[in-house]
Structures are given as structure tokens and as C-alpha cells.
Length: 155
Image (cartoon, rainbow, N blue to C red; front, top):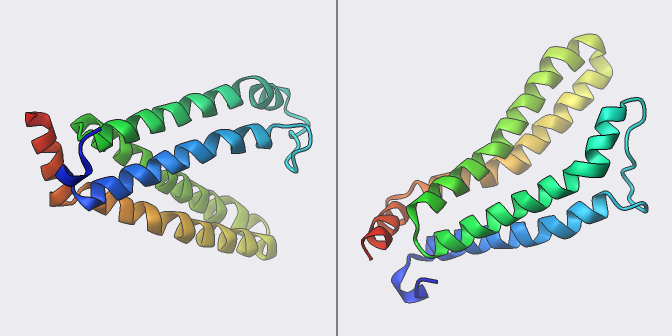
């Protein structure tokens, strides 16, 4: 990895955050699909149960490996890794926006009481997930981080 003295503090902090997230994602994935999990598979949708039981843990592990590799390469000041981490940070924002749209357009008109509760929960989720993602995206787009990637490219 690039010497910590040669890279901005923002690069070190962001790379470390993504490494920790990738490391925590794997145990959570296997806990989520363990028989003792508090989240059992849904019934009535065999393709959904099959995908969750067979493929989803592998997809999650591959995703975690991709995040970890991107974070390590980001710490090594590779420009493609900054782009990859920015895309990774945009995905939860897109998910939160899609959930909010579903809550407002489908749940709220169908059942005002439950729809309002669901919409409120989705809004809180959007803020809790969205604010850190926006901060991360702003840091990834900052001149210091972009400049470090250009310097890293020249080495």
C-alpha cells in the first residue's frame, strides 16, 4: 500500500471505512441465512426462497470481496478504485429512493394508517443511510482525494 505519509487523511479514513464494512458484511451474510436466524425465508415464493438459500450468500461474499479489493486499491491511490467506491456509495441512496417511492406511491394510498407508518420508517432509513453516503460521496469527489488519485497514477 501507499505510504500513509504520502496520501491524504481522507483517503486513509475512507479506505478504512470500506474495509471494515466489507469485513463485517461476510459474517452478517452467513448469520442472516443460518437456520437460527431471526429472519426466516419467506414462504409462498419458491424462486425467492431458492435464490436466498442457494445464491444470495455467494453473491454477498463476492460483493464483499469486490468492496475490499476496491478499498485496498483506493488506499494504493488507484483512480478506478475511487470510481468503484463512489458507485458503491450511490447504491444505498438508490435503494432508499426506490423504497420511498414504493412507500409513497403504493403503501400510502392503499392503507393510510399503515402506509404512513411505513413511509415514516422508510424516511428514517433514508436519512440514517443517506447522510453518511452523501458525506462519503462528497469526500470521494473532493479535490484532495481526486488530486491524490492523479498523483498515485503518475507513480
